[in-house]
Image (cartoon, rainbow, N blue to C red; front, side):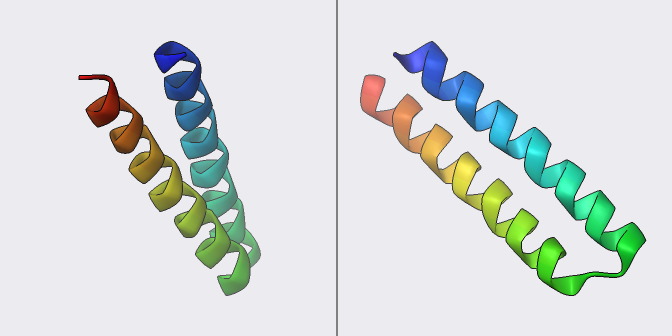
Length: 54
């Protein structure tokens, strides 16, 4: 379960970074904000899962 959560968190970070880059190229502050929130949320959930399994 821990590996699945880590994989999902990494995928969410990758999608968030791609959205942030695309939002910057398209000059879309809303997309950049949502992408940044996605990355922050994925990192927080990943840290939470790792801390719970220890």
